[in-house]
Length: 166
Image (cartoon, rainbow, N blue to C red; front, side, top):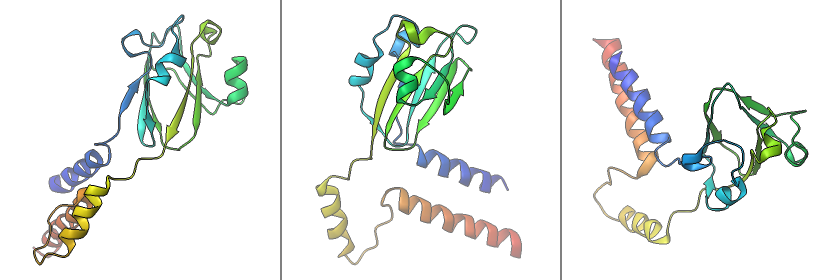
């Protein structure tokens, strides 16, 4: 049983290895009077990354809104809201996201819009290396997440087999 828990922890860790956590405002956090447009323009967001907001939860919050809500600082029809003070939000779609503070902070600059891009393709050298290694007689043990997943499922299958038949 302990090994199956380890397997799932390994799988979860492997799935998030390449994700970046973009802390809004960096060391200034989610507060009034900060140019979040400038901050966002200096970041590159990819599908699977996180955007996190750090703020005093008794004073501020975060709302995911549409463009109209962003432009007008309104939370009507909000698509999501967070109030924890240390909120991690996965950017799982390639699109533009709009976040505002719903306690009035939006009118003091507490709003940020980010564009999420698809994951870039692997470099051609990595693809060429993979194709050339497929031609060799010796099997290649590891090829990224797919191999980790296959290996993990194989290991899990052996553990499951062992626990059922012994």
